[in-house]
Length: 431
Image (cartoon, rainbow, N blue to C red; front, side, top):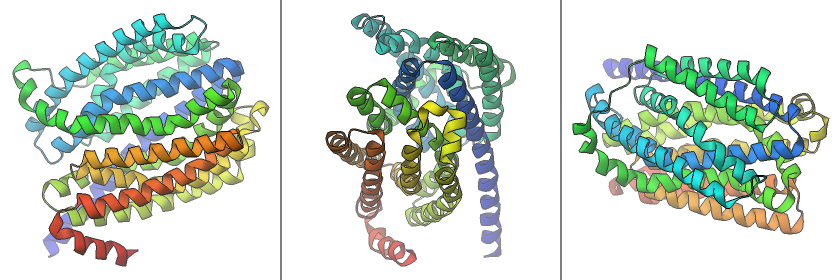
């Protein structure tokens, strides 16, 4: 018993240390993103800034096709494996990653021909491939580091990348094309750094097919889940853009930028905890994984609460100093967003559990239900109110639906049959 307690204590300390590294790397990204946001929103016109918000939203959505197909399955399959086994899995990931990246670039350059050069979508399809290509090695490196729980390396890499990004942005960001230039430059510098200071597994063709079937089986559900999950987050922006115009999109985007400081600990802890949840699930300890996830939800909500209160109280000066006086309408939007973000930890860990239990199909169903609820809520908000604030308020219902439905899927569908009744009683009694 003492030996087991000692092992458990060491594991908990290791998880805490890794969580701090992960929090630091995401913190660097969030801080740099906020500074770049301040530079771009202050130097660009409202219309150009709205185009940039659309660019970021669309690029995140498209990147989820590549990420969803490969990354969740890679993490789930490699959890608990030896370094040699992880290298074998990573070989399969690299080849498919390269093929998808090149295909997306060609598709974008073809699609730009369908739009006017003055269109926001022409700007996106023309420039997104350069961001995609220049950042490919950085993405692969971060995936490899995360699968090996080397979050300190991710922190170092992101620190260099963000410093380079902001240094160039200060001198060159005065229009939309300047934003593309600085991002591609920072990606290129980081790629050179990876080649000189880190050793990623080299592609070995004889090992490529070893895990392809498992990756694709996982990815065929995880890909639409990832894309629809990002569409869920992006649907507000896209619907505001269509119904209210670029100015309203900028107002909503100015408030949404601050949510990174709420999502920051959630993403950071989730990146570390997924590996532990997958290890437990891969060894048949589903009940232990459920209990661990419940503890993490409570702990994360307690960490998020002070940030929510801070944003609610200091929303006016934050919006005024970061975005400027033209974005005063973003203040109530930010306050409403801060409220529904209290539900994000529970929703996030429901998704992590479903994927850790190797049930990405159920997670896809959960995301579809949330997307349907969000689109319906946004439609009602537009018809009756037609303001960014009403769109933000509808998200409270969306995340409430996600948490309730996700918990039901875990208890009734994802847990092994013999553990369902016991785990349900434990989950209810602990609440």
